[in-house]
Image 1 (spheres, helix red, strand yellow):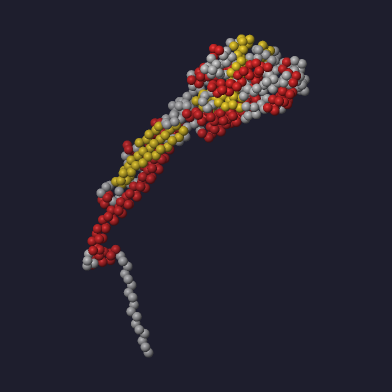
Image 2 (cartoon, rainbow, N blue to C red):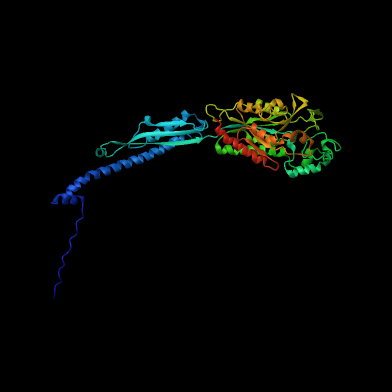
Length: 481
């Protein structure tokens, strides 16, 4: 029986440990490997130590940069924008210092923190710059030969606060604003008043007759048996008057203001006034925009006694006024008397709201000079003095009046021009308005502050135009200081 051949077993290789590796280096006869390793171990150790400490410094700088970001932002929050610069600086400084104190491995001197506040776009803006310097403590200071690594950084944050604004709404409520609002409405009114020669206006007269005057040929009101005036006729025909749209636009504007304030954090107040032969302050300045809306919604064309006669205080008779029912002098005097001294709208250190006057008008005046109804001014709100010297234009308002409101009262003027329509069949228009019809818009624009003028023609969206004018006033408010 043959015995199996013996196969020598392979011995297990011992694992290469650091100890065994160093032992082999020592036992190496040539010594080359040990020499090479000796040269390599120093830079390897230095590189390792440097990598550890620089990684720590980088992480620390990232954390402190984040703290600088938070500190800069704390100086320009919506709430902090209502505070002065000193408060904003203190808030940012305290936030940064408090958070840095919680960090390990850093040497920080609060004296090396710099906070700079500027206002690049006026008092309603603020830019905060937070800059710091610190030292990251090294774990291998003995290897690197330095106990620390210098770190630093800066962060910039800015904000623009929407200024508080007081809006003075002044609505032209004179008889000419009672024209039909659309071309189809104008055509319908003209066709239904052929006995009067065709009238597109919804004239509101208490004393009426179906055989004479401005209500000539009109039907009787079934409920009263009285001849309808053109105002009642327009209502019976379902014709919307321009004055109706102005009232609707004024009411809608309060909603626009409320929504805008909710979005940008500003505080808006409003007042409401109308003017015809006189200036009527219907609502004083108030932050209660719901109340302003209620007051504005109730505005209507005031009744006259008859053509050329205002309604007497007893409501039962007329007072001759020669149709002088649109006094721009009364309007501008009313604005001047009721306006408060505005401010920058920043709410800082007792600052007051800015002020903007909103005038909605067809741009044509008809007023008694010095109370003398037989001396009428029929013309425009303003004509540039360079083109029409005031001394030679007795039917216009002195252009300096608008400038006085803007420069002396520090109020901006926004104007919505509801185009005075050509009415070739109307004798008053042909005699008094047609000669300067093409200039009305330009002259109203000259009265308005830059960027705060717009025009709405027949069939136009008065409410939308007034809302856009409001947004323009809010946007340009940031550039006034």
